[in-house]
Amino acid sequence: MGLSTHVLDTMHGTPAAGMAVELHITKGDQATLVKRFFLNADGRNPDGMLYDHASLKPGTYRLVFDVASYFQSRGVELPEPPFLNKVSLDFGVADATAHYHVPLLASPWSYSTYRGS
Image (cartoon, rainbow, N blue to C red; front, side, top):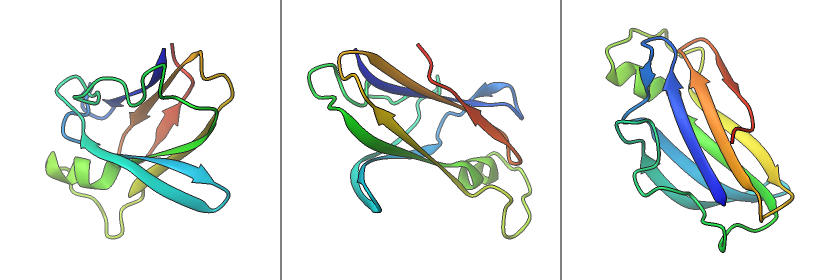
């Protein structure tokens, strides 16, 4: 099935349209940028899956969500420095034949994630 993500803005109760996201492959302390993108109106990658079933490999990955810039672009006044700037989620893919969905629920002051379906 592959790898996907979805971000919901819990402050406004909407998808986080326009949020910048980066996907990295990690090995120890090294991170290699795979792609940068901006979330679409549904809070998802406009190109669909980040990795399709054939391209996803077992290993470790990082998603970086530019939370502060997103909320600033929505007119939210944040302190300097903001409480949350960029949220990095490091996760592992053990079974590349399975679907890995990594959602983020975010506000300027909190976030949560889980392995979705």
